[in-house]
Length: 437
Ligand SMILES: C[S@@+](CC[C@H](N)C(=O)[O-])C[C@H]1O[C@@H](n2cnc3c(N)ncnc32)[C@H](O)[C@@H]1O
Image 1: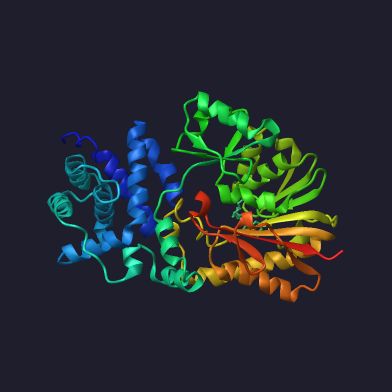
Image 2: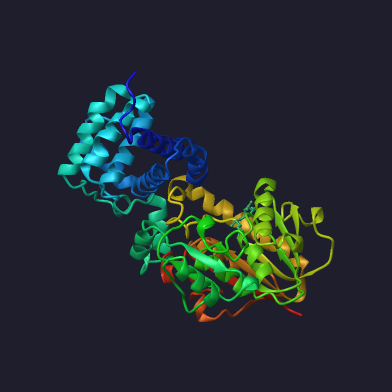
């Protein structure tokens, strides 16, 4: 058999990843981690990543074009070729690759994914996409590439902002760093970035955040292996700042893995007695890895447990502060994980809200009178955010909403909300709840 055309193996891997995400429900991140090592050239790996992200971002308008352009859908056994077509349209439409770079390598890749008979069809459809604009769908959910239920929810929850949210969800997120306050000042680190020729900006708030002008591999950042910085979105950084731990406090990080905020807690105050819980032992192991790189692993106790099942992990000593970074729909981070749009189902939201309420109710007795709990999600749905906390406050006599400054986001019921893209950060919700002394 002849060697495959250059560029065809990368397209075939993109098709396999996209197919695994949309047909087998796999996570994009996990699938890329599994399949990318097959490619030796880092440019090929970057190309596959870009194809997969853009194909999953723009899946609905691409599916719409294919439906219009094909007399009948491909048979079920050709799902990888279908995914390859999405990758092909992503190259021409979102990535704007020149047709000569995209067409034959993508058509040839059909052979590599078991669709040898469809090389001509792939070629013809992609050629058509070079000549014609994508057909415009009547539905805004299709045009903006969101599932109907999510589009409707966003329109209902954010009537004045929905268009901006949909656009932000389809725009790649910038790379944000959090400077480890224990290792030096942000301005000193900014000088190191300058010396390394890494373009960046410093927001007014928070004082630990740095926005890079372009994505870089974290291991190439100055001081990475010494724990000078971590990669963490701006909005995620605000959760620990909202809780504002002070030196020596006894703190619970109830849903800690993979440990981004656990590390931030340890950086933000000295001598914390910090317990990091997560019910997923594999994810909890990653907390140890994050802390080890920062040289902070000795400072944190870790336990794999269901945080809501307090008899299994709580020793009865009350916490001064609790961070509940709750499991949620992750609708605020779609720009970083476009596969969320296709994995999440409308029914999930009610189930998640019940889980969040169960966590809030179970953790409350572990907080000392006068203590505070920060409820945070990377969701932008009211049911998981303002409505969730309003429900908790109404059934919990000794709980009060505490004020957070405007810099944390727009006032939203008892908390603060940031929408995706606002200030360059992800969508996030924070509510600080105090317990009466
Ligand atoms: C939003 S993520 C936490 C992110 C983490 N705080 C960080 O900053 O890296 C939610 C986490 O909650 C965990 N989780 C879900 N239900 C839980 C429960 N009942 N008890 C403890 N952890 C839970 C999940 O395993 C997941 O790791």
